[in-house]
Length: 371
Image (cartoon, rainbow, N blue to C red; front, top):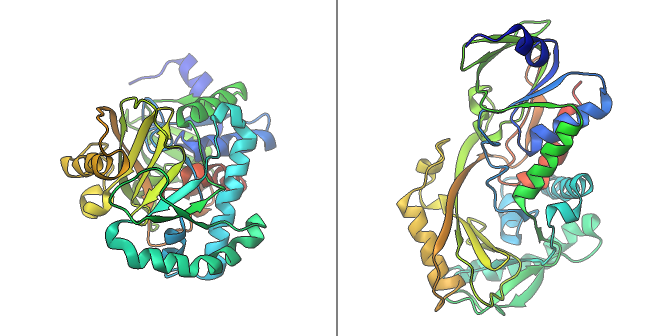
């Protein structure tokens, strides 16, 4: 593809800051850069027609981790690291809400619930035993107790009668969030170019050369990689793709379920969307297959999700599945995001560990701070 004089001059020349990925991190990075460099030329390059990762495909959980997830993190991280992770998630959510506004986010703080399968009695007991300890760890962040023992008031079946409640968890409308961030970027004269897949980049000292699927090479001054689960092609850090599959039910009359719910150590999660149920997860059924950037669905995971709807979440209620999709997260051995320079002119903010809604805004802001 050959670009015209007009196209190159207006879109592709004299780029001060190029951002790869138009998700939460990329847009937040661009907005932060605009505040500090009001006259700079900022261009976001997006490989998809829409943000093509997890930002428009997540479940819309405004969460910071269930108690079993936090206990699991403590096996591989220090107390200080876990507290820092939770603090960054809480701060990120506050920044997102301040940037977009609760009304535009369609934010509702119904609270979060962790459920335990019949086979997870020991896990439930461990979580209840450690509840005071975890509340103590997190008290400097919330100045209140976070996790409480609760009962199954939603008529869920085939789970333990007790659950753990967290009043600080909320839910958002992911689509409205992204529309608002894109609008803010556009109003700030930030260019967003969709269907532009960058296949190679090279820092040559005084500039970075970006090569696109058209094999056109464009020089830019600074590059910020914000592709999360798709970042492996650009760096050697510990980050790999993790596919999450999701479905949404048909409307259910008199649905009484409101909130965000975690099951099986967070490998399954569900919530209400108005009078529907959104349910996602299941990558623990086959980790190897789900380590992919292919946005496909598998019969094994989709069948299990439907079984959970029928057997646990809305038993004895007829429903259909109106929507199915998958998204790609970025995960690694550690939960701590990777936010660092890769060279003098290339920087990355990746490995959000399934917490993009919570930490995406703050990671984008941190990423912009390298210049």
